Length: 328
Image (tube, rainbow, N blue to C red):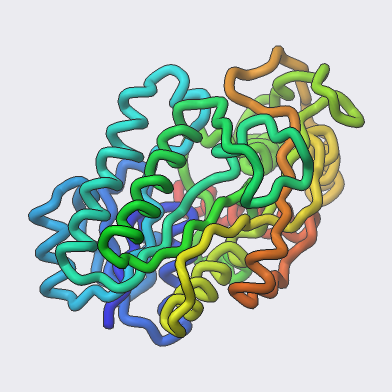
């Protein structure tokens, strides 16, 4: 039985592939390499360059590789970009996902794990937010993911496609062995940007909004180590294979850090006092979003091991240094 990983050459997907290989799984990757890198895919794992919306290609992969499970990461993920280009996001994230789900159903794929986001909650009324909380996305990115969640649930009811939807909070860090990490140029993730500034690859970091209703006025987020997130997917796959019913689960630690706190942690871990500029709020950013992650821990038996902000930052710094050597 083969696991198809879409977006497997990207940041989170490449960590997933390493985790699957370590678990003894047979894996094939589908990625258009728009933001991913062929060198990020674990050695020996086939990489097919193409689109998730290319149904003839996907159908061929499912049949020839004997795909029994799909882990779907491929997506556009930058909130401000989605505000500027909503139709592009709906095409890549929603239309292409619909095509992939249809191929999964027609190809007899048994299990489907979907990479969703805490952005489906919008500006949560209660924190920490539970999976049953109100869904009110503030950006086309969040809406595009929620639409896919709805399609996947309906496909599960109509066609019996068993699935797990994992709603990520803020993913950060890098593989502790530094085999892969966040490698995209012009990334917008806070820890990635702060680390680049600390290492002199950017002039400054901007803090977007200091007047939010939070303790220090800056946005509050739940940061999860990318390796713990990959483990949650492994646990979800094992859960489905044991006959578990379709479910939705948050992936976070249940603890929020403000933008100011993250910046100070990067300064402390790196030993660099870098430039920080204050800027107006950014469209689509909720004030705070922190996970209630009990369901993942209980239903999936997920046991995170890297729940520590300085560790996340240290791994991100290590990867950034290695990436600089690769890009010379």
